[in-house]
Image (cartoon, rainbow, N blue to C red; front, top):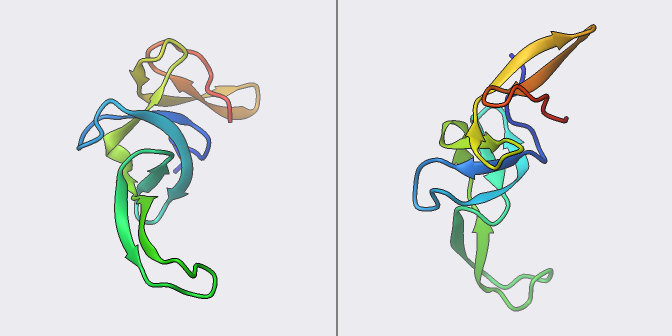
Length: 104
């Protein structure tokens, strides 16, 4: 099945502690049905000092969100569902709210 959310898409969080926040998808974890969104769902990790990071300490990093908890943002800034249609000989994604083709 084709991916409805891809790397680089602008998404909004629909549920959880960061509900309403927007960000760009940095990574899609296909097998786990999860996405990493820039600046959203930050968790703190306690890291031990290593040669690469001699300081160690408490670091913030993004945790994965389930794809059902995010939605693509359309050109008007509203969350939208994604559909597929054939244009010419290519299968393209489009926003269900506006009908516009989504780049990528």
